[in-house]
Image (cartoon, rainbow, N blue to C red; front, side, top):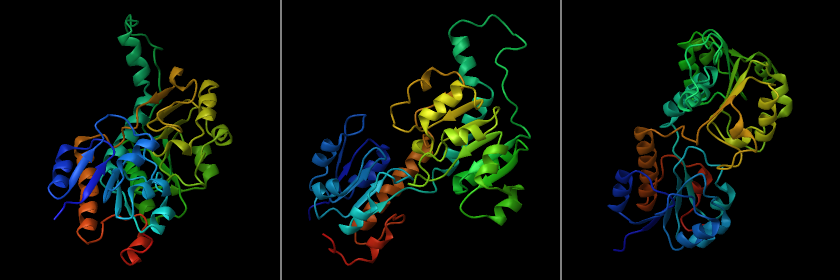
Length: 332
């Protein structure tokens, strides 16, 4: 019997590809770059399954190019704002993601950005590397205290809660805003639920963990930045478009807020003009999940989802569950 055909849009850990090749014919994008839309449509033709990345827009045109035999697209990511859920469900294509396994890594990176920004780590390291350091000086690279400061968390999902637990080691006061309260979380870390206005006004460090939805695009814009303390630090390791990046550049330039730490950007890989020239921002290239163990676990989930579906079962992490209630072949 002919093996199912799977296309992988970017290189993932070899062990994951080996597990997939044991049951499927697998082709992988050999180039270390995102595919163009035309290239994506060309390479997915005739495939039974696809492993995609957030950089791959999976919409009706791509699914039609793949063909009616395509049963599943597995995102190698916890986010799935690159998916057109309605188009996939209409075509009876299962969409999956990789939740849970990257919570620790993302929360750790969030706190890394917080500490690096507060203590001006990247700025001072550049200074040393450039040969400018001439010895200890009492006012050189004076940063912010983290201990016993107020940490504001926007979006209390798994990652937001993980960040809060790490903040407890620094005796930080925790406030949070979300679509619903979580009394158990409040009791566990002595946190306080507040509205968005209070979150903005009282946070010394504000970290964003909201999903990217139409209503959360530019969750932080010029108006919100003006409501924050001038000594505040903004951290974003969620999705770039939740921050109006041009407004953030202006706020950092004008010292409306003290600093920012960013792992994600509004129009990746492009940065808003002027961002890279600012000393009061720490910028890293979307590496929140970039640990060996985490990336391996992400691949294992994606592969398991594909094999489950191609062998007649159901995936572990479906993001368009309505498709699971359709009869096989519906919408094709």
